Length: 306
Image (cartoon, rainbow, N blue to C red; front, side, top):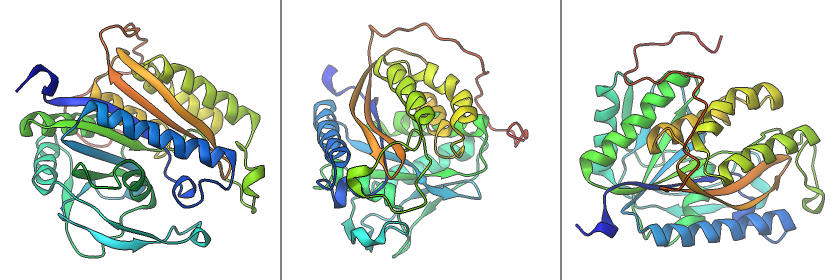
């Protein structure tokens, strides 16, 4: 294997999951900017040249353990449950079945409950559909789609991220991670004309900008450590905001040695949506404020979120 094709997790993306950039990108300047951000992220993936895309979607909440799509070619027509008026999203994806089973095994070895999902018509979530259609619409790369457990605390989420790194290492893959998540997550409860769409509040906007400042500097672990405070300030559901940062940092490496690129930022029906790329770098900030401990094996719920 040449130096350019070294295995491992070669980069990560944070992308929004609402369907507007896919189904109505020209309805507003925000949606067009985000759609263009997805295009820039696709170009970044092409430069990274991965063997596999791993999608961790906060829009696929699991209740018991962690789930991984293992059906080799899932095919369906998806309609978003909130924005069904925007239309249908037909899809046919190329899934890496052996990797799915390897990941399930790695997660169980670290004490987690996990299972592979393989049946026709399984409802793949909007976020995974949007991300894969915009980033991998030609199925250039096989994918793996992972759930986000609603009840997982930080320890369990970190261990699941490390399980993903284990599976990548064992299979010798060159993988890129895609986290589907908003920043702030307060949606408008009334209809908003696309041209009038904006981030729900100034406070949300300010915290979104702070997170993007950190991520743009490649400070992934600092962002993960900041996530609890972000949750307290802008009250996003835990499965949506700080959990993805814990997962991404645990899988890619809990440090700040990344090149960060904010490809796009804008509002999606009140939420703060961003397309961000992170690539390991030897010239990152490095130093971090590590306020929470590390964990290698999940030993049960400690009720730390109570």
